[in-house]
Image (cartoon, helix red, strand yellow):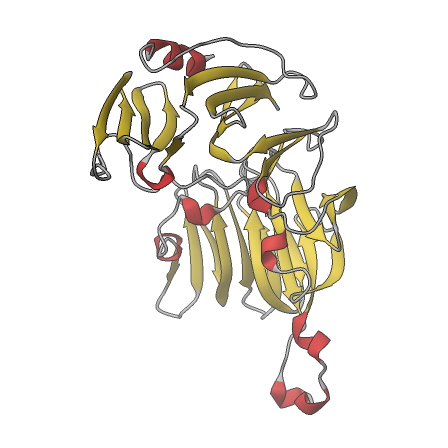
Amino acid sequence: MRILHFLQATAGLLVLFFPLLLLGQPHVKESLILKLDSNESIVREMSCFDLNPEKDMLRIVTRHTSGYYVWKNGKKKGPYESLPENDDTACPPGRLLPCAAYSTKECHPQDYYTQYVSSDASMAMYITHNGVNHGPFSAVMQLEVTCDKAAFAAIVMDMESHIRLIHSGGKNLALSGNPFWLKLSPDGSTALAAMGKMIDPANMDVSKLTFEDFTSFRVFSLDGKAYGPYRQDKTPQENFWFSNTSGSNWYMLHEGAIYKNGNLLRPVPDGYSPCQLWFGPDGERLFVSQFEGGTLTEDNNTVLMHHPLQVITRHEKNRTKISWISLDKDNRLVLYESNM
């Protein structure tokens, strides 16, 4: 309810406020932010829709036949003959639509590897995490640290040249092959390691290798289960992900379907990416950022967020909630809210 209280506080901006249950979308509430004229449109690149209860971040620039208008702090100013300058105090940088897929790259600097990995005089390598040294290793090949820095997973080569998947919680899994990629869940409890064929030109006839030899890989989870094989050209790294809102569950887009924890969950049409697929904590209910050309339809476990301008998720009272702002077919800017 913090977002609703925040919107109520900007009473001058709200033309009308009313929560209701949307037909066909159980448990989804809507609140009208403002109503645009029929000949008025939002200038997306100049507007921001950050729902932050600590600060009014609703700044909406519209284009009208009479000129440009700015909605801010409950007031509408204009018309202006030309597009007004952006107000950096109202719109923070990096205000692109958020992605549903969890990525540690969004919260760590590019060089964070050097913050955790070091070597001694003998060139043995160590991972130092929360004051604890892990190692020695002959190589640290992949490293992922959760955004809260509470956990890490790594693909390493031990001092006997064995490749292993290790975790800050103590798990140590033997692997074989060439590391392709490593992913870590938001809560740090689960990791996925993709391993391809080890290509050693000194000990094999490379001319006899096939395309599949170079692109095929298997996925190993921290509990020792193996999945695949898959091919990079058909199921690339981006098709495996952890969701920002679904805990330790991992997902895969593969051959026209979504898999959860390696098991078939549901078919999905072409054209959808992990960034659009917001799963609830149990991995059953799905909220979809639906854009032009999207063909998914709603059902009891699927809610379509049509052309969202902003998506916000938060945890309240042991529940995960999702909110989004969209411009509906009647030119109304609407806030939608639901439990996931």
